[in-house]
Length: 114
Image (cartoon, rainbow, N blue to C red):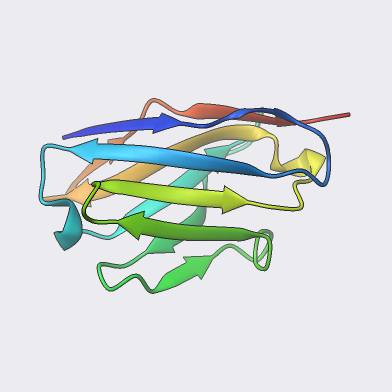
């Protein structure tokens, strides 16, 4: 299993970014996918989750601003982040639980600052 995240960067408050996570090594369409983040000095937290049927759930802190989606033809999960705030600054990780083992992408850094 491999997860390759990309799309992070520096953005001003109120701006937008779109993260991507390309997956391989398993039948992507058969597994729920998640985005987590870890801010400096804080524990890793679940940001958004998407089921195999594309139902989505979000942390309260990002509801209405972030959208998770998936493209099963491209084996890719996305996180569209709008109205970004400084408190969204973190390393973002894509995640899958495959055969009871947690797999993580390498993380992509999002910095929200003026």
